[in-house]
Amino acid sequence: MTKSLRLVALDEDDLAILSANLQDALIRVADMAYLPQSKRFALVGKRFDWVKAGEGATERCAVGLHFERVLAASRIGFEQSETERELNLLAIHFEPTDAPAGYIGLTFSGGAAIRLTVECLEAQMRDLGERWVCEKKPEHNGGEGA
Image (cartoon, rainbow, N blue to C red; front, side):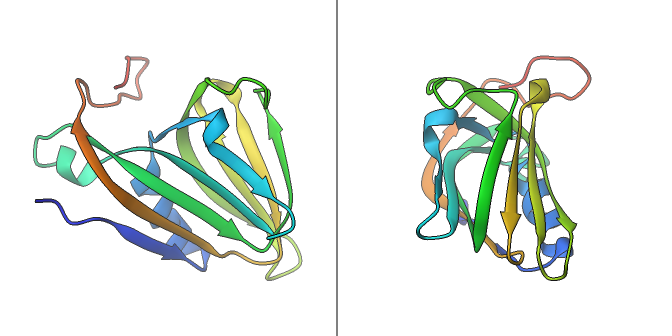
């Protein structure tokens, strides 16, 4: 039985680890939301388990991710109305402005991106339990992913 992953990011080093574990997560547009009254941006998706891939397995699991202290959210490369569109997350990064404030960027394949304006970096990721075998390991050399 695989142990569920739970990560917190409070600085750029933490965020790099979180980003690496979420690389190639598949996220439907309908499963992302900016909640301005709560100052939160949240999403659920299907995380590819790169640790298990190192052991020869190709598994995905349900995952939740949220950012706190979010002041604004913007998007490029997709429309909010494309609710069934599935985006492939490539990376998450932080760009400081007036410390500890800054921008969090979520970069997706195909030129899609989300930019969050934050008071500070505060994120949490958690596996949600469900796991399944997928057919292929994601590739980054122009091949098809799972």
